[in-house]
Length: 186
Image 1 (tube, rainbow, N blue to C red):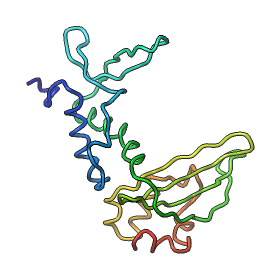
Image 2 (image 1 turned 90 degrees about the vertical axis):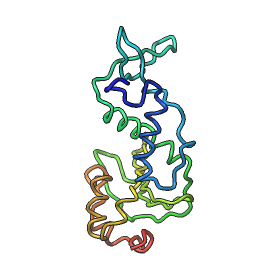
Image 3 (image 1 turned 60 degrees about the vertical axis):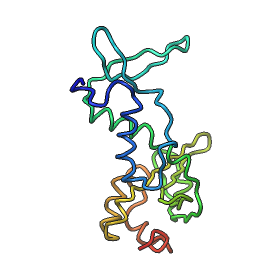
């Protein structure tokens, strides 16, 4: 077997390895929640197999673009690319809002900052901001390993994940949010 491709040339073997890593942060996840990858793969380019990223052409065909990565980095990218699929399968069961009304940048305002508990387990942060004509939202799943930390350590690690710079919700806001600590099981 090729040293660069220790699990062969089928991308699903690498997705399986990525899923093993993802289970640490998403212990409730099941492998069937992840579909075959459409963005990353393994292709023969010239005479050699390569890890590739697919680019869509104007006619809808996919073109493999070689990536300069090793096996570990490829698996890391697969895990990153597929984490949203796990979130999509784990519906929100309960929420708590973190009160914070602040300007994010320019004329954008923080509209929603919510911590969510999910049906299959786990928590996420949902953040929505916008102005009079545009808006955006993002969900950040909180890794299960964070909940093994003390409350103070959890807040520090959480603020690395959901940086206060973009949303202007800092440690004080989280510490003073009524019921948040209990909601998160602390």
